[in-house]
Image (cartoon, rainbow, N blue to C red; front, top):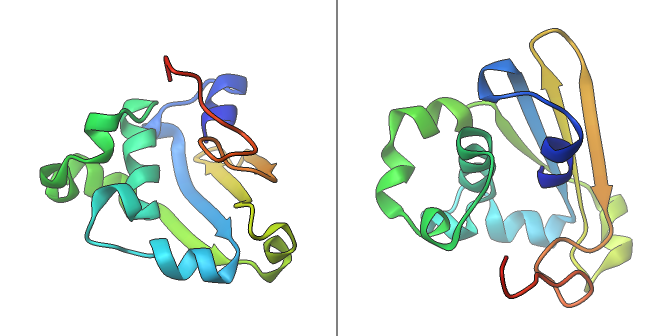
Length: 124
């Protein structure tokens, strides 16, 4: 989602839906979890609302009940994708965003940000 936000100018009100594709074992781990930093639907909603995710926002349990975040979360669907299993044990992902005007945005990464193959800088 970060890449799509950097390349395209849209805000949460312009987003109709978000599809997050993960390998099935990973999808099982992060699907609708009660811990905010492990719940992919919640993290995508925070990214839509805030245009970023911080350590604090990723661990803010109270925000999981915030009506604004819940509105964004309702747009997010997690889809297990067997094709992404080819990257395991490296975590890969694909995100598709559909805007209200019908525009489709898509990005696939073969090593998600923050993993050993795609590490974050100290500042990040």
